[in-house]
Image: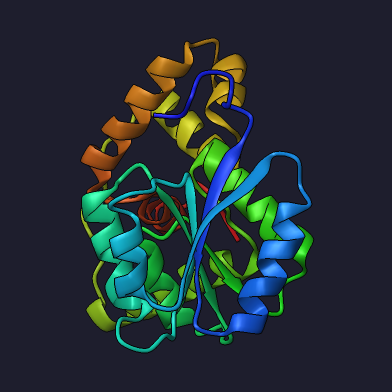
Length: 223
């Protein structure tokens, strides 16, 4: 839990073996009044050791690192510290990798050539709304879904969703926050969160990325 009065400060840690990139991101984010850099690591193992003592709100996690890479580190963070949001960083926009990492629980996926303002926006968005979807992640999820359907050559059983559940799922896919959705459908934020959990149970999705894929597959949203 954060200290009282510090709700507006987002605590951020970064794990990346490229010292110059790490320093650049730290400098850029430290200039933001609502960001506090609390930890940095060269690899996943070092990061996990730091997390025993410091709990950030958001972790910026490089995919390719020595000793323990981001792909191995992500599931460990999600298992041990499920409340921490993780933004994956990489040099490559590999669609199959993006789909895999989003399904493993990544909250956002950015290439390292992203502008510092985009990184800041991703950190703020995952902290406030759990996920940051951009053109890269959306396209990767859709492409991943297409390949999966081609491989299976069958349509999985459709979940029976109520009109309200469909409306809320559509709004979630439009990147509306829980509060925005609650206001639009005249429900409390707590009720919207309960419906989101119910949607995951009904559709078999393990994450928001899975819900997006379900919504596209079912024709609830179109890309």
